[in-house]
Length: 280
Length: 313
Image (cartoon, rainbow over all chains, first blue to last red; front, side, top):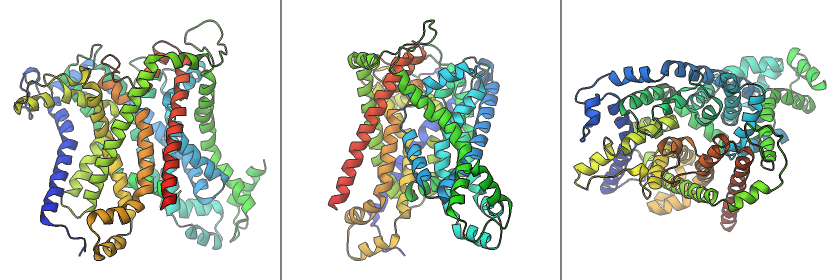
């Protein structure tokens, strides 16, 4: 039993505070969902209802009619998958090297991770735009993927270094003593223990790319190539006069994949982040 | 060349890996492991950054036929006299402080709360995923629905409570920035909370119990046990949040696109327009440089202050 017992009024206050936060956290999202299922008549009324009285899927149908949502989702999926896979493939060996060899390299890498967080993207995107333009990679998913990989690397490294450090070096040394070569140790001892962390990192890189907006806005010019977040802003219209129902429906759909994936890996992300932050 | 052979040797044959591998070989192996990530980093991150710094001293523009020329510090001189830029800079600082400070305080309170043995903690954690995982564009769209003057839930609630007709929050000169800041706080709070909570759970519980047995009240326990242990995490989170917020783009682009009358035009929005609407690459790069410089100075001051505080302890 805990020694730090809390008095009853204090406890009540705690629950009230928690409730206030839950409401603050949930209500915009509930409003989005509610709006997505409202028929046009209810949306136009001067006294909007919390729960749609006459729920409908019309908004979803209309959203798909108005904008190329499926193709945009396909583009997003492709870019995010490619970025996540490549980022993890190149980051894992580097993270391993940083975690196991305390050297100038790991200091430099940590420094770069911290510094890279501080750049305003505009300073990087202008030269990247010029370079990609010369390579004819503007308005191409390949160019976007390249940018996403590098953009995902600092955080992927950060997480992975934490995961590698969580694997006791003694295990590897023991295997080495038993006569296993370095590569064998990596493949048969370290890799299996690292897999959950690598998967979590890949999923996180996937979500960041799926959600990303700024680079996609700058690099993708035509609607056929644009990713979901960029296409979503087309619903807003020129003067910001938006068709609320389809807008809400499309926004709701775009969020679902991230929410599901994030729900699965949330704990691992915090763990990885903290391990990286505290132990470096 | 030597690094390749070394890696082959250490990786390929069993006899090469003794119980204690010698360090020279291990370091060669390390470089080999690092290259796949290092090359894209150098080509697509460090390279463009240096290129960007260089562009700030040129008259680079998009879609121009003459060659780009060095103009020295001309862009910076122009920036110095560009009142719109300094307006956006001021707005950026107000926004970054306005979001980061409440975000931290609220998140700290909530993390302490969730560290207690309360019911429904799981629900808070589950809901915290929503703002954290949502695309910023969707967060912006969602809050536009909330703030909508006619069909939005905010004005409807105000009308229901008999507090008047509500207003057009995002287009009001006085309300736009606070309205946008509230969204920023909402969007970033869960991440801050969960990180702080993880930091709290890393602090030894025995210390707390010992302090409680000694008769220390909640506030004293927080000051003498919790805070010192949490401080490194809190410091890192605040510094990163500040930088991220100062460099924010998507949320405000969707909510107000810098309006009304530039009241929410963050530096990134300004630089984006300058670069990709007006094609002033050199000028926009100079803006980026100024942003980096100011962030670095602020962070350095912050860190020095923190370190001094540490010394006095």
